Length: 482
Ligand SMILES: Cc1cc2nc3c(=O)[nH]c(=O)nc-3n(C[C@H](O)[C@H](O)[C@H](O)COP(=O)(O)OP(=O)(O)OC[C@H]3O[C@@H](n4cnc5c(N)ncnc54)[C@H](O)[C@@H]3O)c2cc1C
Image 1: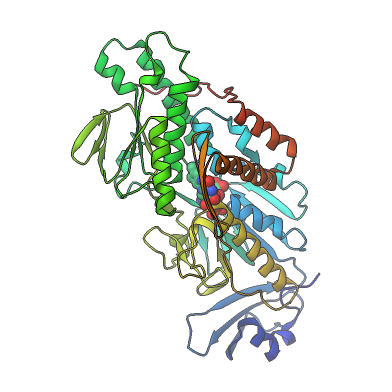
Image 2: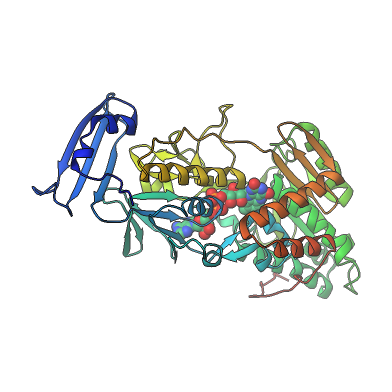
């Protein structure tokens, strides 16, 4: 196979260097020992561009070794990067703190008892079993030593020649972290099963309740944030109460449950065109959801939620407002925006570390219109594929790929099981047909991740026929304050 740099003579080959960074270069070669040209020596090459530079490349290469590529995170970005590198001769290690890849767009279905965890999450090892050059590690990355090109895993280290960071994002409480215990967010399978337990327990508690006010409190559900996840949760909980559970209880009428969608801004689905936002609000109202716009949450506590100065008693508060990127910016000591996203170069590399890339929800890069590329699954996948191609080219000593360009395929959001809104570059749609398209798109994406058609069709069948096998209360029982 081709090595990153075959020998010291080619390192000094000026046309090659010019191709590497396309600027005239001042070259400093630091040879670690006097046997630089010998076969095993390690060479540190540092070069600066003319503007004395913000650009610093530090490549360490050893003859006769296979290039090591480390990918942190097996979400959409990391997984598609690993798949894109399958034809290289590099040694690839993908590290994730979970043993599974999670299809987050359907997480709300697990949280609302429509799907089981195993319908939307699959072992990373299994997904990558045919990628013979990929090793999977179940571990948590704690930092990065950029100086020595090592990933830190607690007290262990893992060397790399190229590093791809795809560690995603989590919800944020805008400095009110103590709200999390009262208002859980939705990001992982554990979050989803905890929320499922909390929602189902609220109905159980209401059934056993003798105090009318307490019963009402148990049957009030507040969802904070009217983005796609908030809208999906609110619509589905309303359907659960009005349809699925309607005949299950004897003391309560589940249809009397109150579902509130609280939003500080002026409309639901703020990233969609205004007309579709209006439609979504109307569709939510039809499902029985009370949408409170321009209502900012000022406290979440044991009793309920405080909105615009008024406390609304409720036993279940779900947080769907705001995201914070993973701490990669801190690991790299890089510039980030307020949400913690790392400002990356047009080729998704990190300034001053051309062999380190940040992709997906952790990266901040602008699209053609100068707007930040959204934190979505397609954006993360495109970035994963792009970086895989760029690294493959470098390994084969080909010219670098062009700058990353985000292709916007549009936005979709579903409102319950009957309507959705679609905002594509060329057309917009709402209603039942949009919902059918939403279902088909999700089947397509599921197949994209987990190949077997049978799995996707099983999911679609369960989804279409209101299969409710997932309505189980499992795990530790939450202590209710009654
Ligand atoms: C509830 C919900 C619904 C969504 N719905 C949609 C939707 O409908 N459409 C859409 O396009 N997008 C949706 N998104 C957004 C989409 O899922 C993300 O944009 C996408 O997953 C980002 O991909 P990523 O690879 O950057 O990160 P993720 O997919 O989040 O993957 C990050 C991975 O890194 C791992 N990780 C993190 N930190 C560490 C560490 N220190 N050590 C080891 N591993 C680590 C995590 O375990 C995880 O597997 C939704 C997100 C959520 C939470």
